[in-house]
Length: 319
Image (cartoon, rainbow, N blue to C red; front, side, top):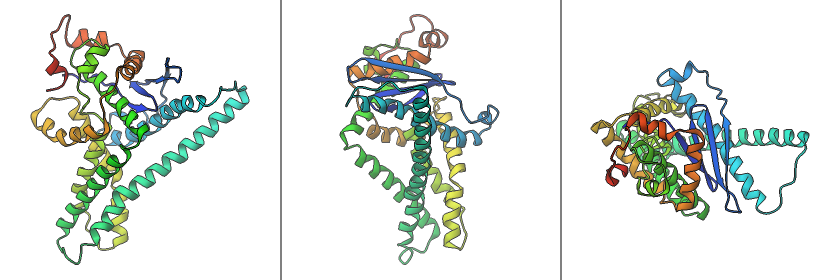
């Protein structure tokens, strides 16, 4: 199976799909019509950097966070407009509004990264440190720190998944995966075929984050500083490298059906059972329109499967 190289994320009542430097955000409006916006994504990452293994993962991760925030803010506009009629803005007002949104997006992005590092990297270290009086082995403490990190991650997902709005977002997340799996297994992109496709995908951001948790355990074994402050600083400093390595693993997983790679991908796919839910047909329709706005799936199908290539339901489900 050749990767289509398209990816995306769920947004509020919709889906963002990206292919190359173009992305589309499809949203189900309050009047039940589907609105799709297609734009060019001007990445801050130089083209040459995108080709350097391990380094590219660091910048692509940040780049995807920025794009994701843009897509979320676009979809949020429809939720706000539901409460009242949108007023037409003048050119100056639109420019000020865009500047304000950009500032808010930057602040939220920085705050999110700081909180994520604090909760998922620093907190597990201090919690595992409480066991130093009982456990003297640095290796065992490092493994326990990693397990605590994974438990916090899974606990966080479990907690947020109970929220009604998040449940709908997870359903759209499922629609995104099912569309990509439908295409990559040679099926025509329609509601019926998307419905029978798997909602798990090896290139998912959930799997990436899970690999970050696992890779961090390995890297933390090499932190031998005596100072507690230095141990915390080094954990934070290693985050870009951890992200870079995790990105390469996900990239490899999405481009191969190697049994070993598939086995390593299983824990991440299992976690996706928590972050994706089965979508309804109206959500699948939004996902299909977002995909078709930036990706010619018929051309991909002809190049990789040929005309009339038979694909069974089990193949579509990735079984």
